[in-house]
Image (cartoon, rainbow, N blue to C red; front, side):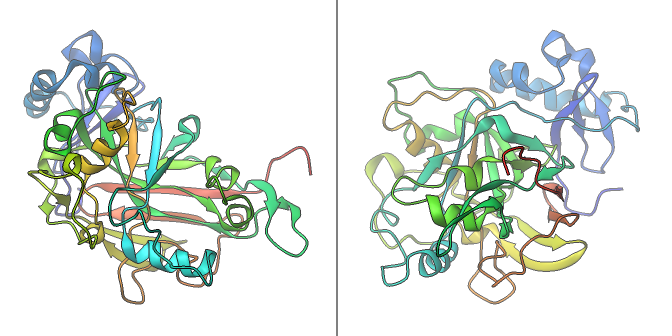
Length: 343
């Protein structure tokens, strides 16, 4: 039985599309047609809201799935964009990584800031994560396995219906393009990240793995809230979001020990605004693309959504990091030793 508060979610088994009911039971939807007989949601997402409604209506009468079947990666994103939507995280990380400079970048209150991540290393919960290697910060910098392996407590917003290249979707219309939400851990090698980030942003320190939960919860059933203030009025294309932010809780544990409890109420930019920011310059989106919220942190001790904000300790080989949301589910991964062949 699932904990009270879990919501309907969709994912995939080896037999095809599946759903996790609100009571925690898993049902097989592969009998609904050819689009449902793939080991991911991609074909169904491309069909759009009318088909999504048919899928949801079928959940109550669908047969139970094989209890021994493990969920697969629910979507195969062509693009993954990670944002920086929580001011508490931005300020803490700014003080650590940019001492002597303003902790909040001047553009942050005006537009959602983000970078394009590596979609090819998005993996489903339970996948082992190998420690990455790279050039590490220090005097002098050295090459080797990361010694500051970190987590990031995030949400991922999954694109349903994409947009065409050269078009823009304002925030007021963006949620028609978003299907649902997953729990997301954008693993980070902080020592590699610190060495390589400026001036173009993170690369190897963030590209080795991003883990997501196996069940995508439709965005229209997730509790909503007003976003945290950014401190500036949004641009016209970011205004008019009718639904606002999402309101879920998340708990970070390492080997079962609680490290932080956070709320997505601290996000200042909404799913619709993140989507609008991706498309405003004319970039296309496709079914299955993921928009990461960036690390979610609160203002008080014990609400840091990454280990670096709490002063460590960082992850050791063999440890398991788990992020659980009572409303959305769980993402976890176990750290394996570095596998690079160039040490």
